[in-house]
Length: 373
Image (cartoon, rainbow, N blue to C red; front, side):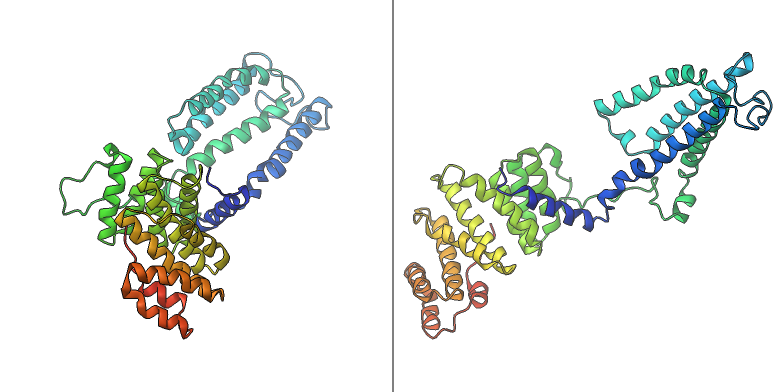
């Protein structure tokens, strides 16, 4: 429903991934391509050496496990199985206590942890049927895993290795109201419409970052809230985030145009605004053909009766006239500029500039009446 292709979404994701310093996708396969094959190689090699009575394995052990080719037996034979089961359980508890996954209170996470906890019992049984040579490797491997996790919990070690301090307090998002205003508005209780209204107040104070946070929250609660999409697109454009701005504006246009041109006053106004700002963003990116297509959408609409929508409509025609002139379509530019001047004579001077071919998009955009929504 966003009107964007999967390719566009992937490109946007790739840009965000690089901006946040996330590693390459290939790191996801690193453990499968290197760690897992090595693990299987070591396990199967030691097992075969134990079962095939490799020279020295029959007397190369120590304490109660001198013969590494034998299965666990007698009372002492339970030591390795208990160690393996205990170390597995300890590893699971430490992993879920220190990992961000363990802090996610979800049903799937609880089921996964429960499965790993229960797996302790089968591991105990399986280890009773494995040669002691393999058990020595298993216990050593599990012990080092526990030691590694415990060491990496310490802030000093993490600092030496260049890892983030997990115990450090996370940076909080900017408050949505100045600290001088008490009490702070509990945004978690606000509706999407109220969040939008509060974001507009922040925009009027040039607090764009706080406005963006509120608009994101509004769209999380109501992903179909077109009005918030349009304001978000305009705000991101003012912040210079053109790619993100066009994404929201295109989504708004797609939803407004889903069943043809809208007829409700508010939806008509939103379509005019979103098309106008999408055109401006594309023009700023140098994608003039895409920008012109959006501005021409405004011209295809019927002139609104509502005063506010009518003002936005003629602002869009003014931008369209400028874009048409840039494309060398002077006659069409003149036609739309005359309509704008008939509505607002203050732009009469642009007619003379157009005739003298001194009219350009940049000067027009700077002088046109741009209204903050």
